[in-house]
Image 1 (cartoon, rainbow, N blue to C red):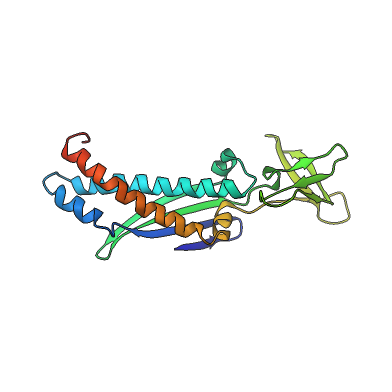
Image 2 (cartoon, one colour):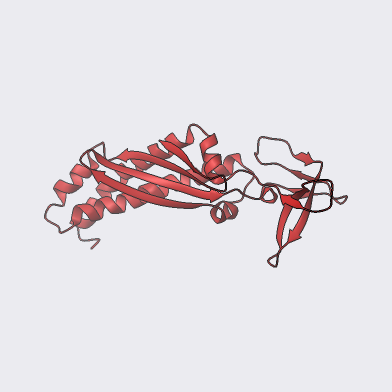
Length: 203
């Protein structure tokens, strides 16, 4: 399940799914009953691995579709992971949060005559932006793509592409794929974590 939240500047996407449905949690509770906090340690470790794998899948799929570098993805995205266990089971949520990414980060080019073009999605052709220009601003040398708001030279505004949460939401299947990956990874890891604790490989 996914949900978009935000005010148009800072935007969040929540991906959540139930885990442990194949008996992994129950196995951990039974097998580690004699070890203090054993079940919670095994489940917690497996959940961390599972959510990390889900977040990595989201990044991989976004970078396949958008003209965006991995370092930019990480710079403009934060993910928070939550686990809630109640009588009905354990639900895992990953909240992807991030602001709109400057258009200059999406395959933007400036020709010698100052004409600017950009491409946001890899499947699209490079598009010339007739009234845009590239400029370096600020004391940290931020390079952006700008356009004038009116007929006068000033003011100007910077152009932006989508945020990472929006990119995720545009892919209708990706949220489901991330949820599936979390569940699969949890079931793969939980037995390893149980054995690690039973054999004393992990405190």
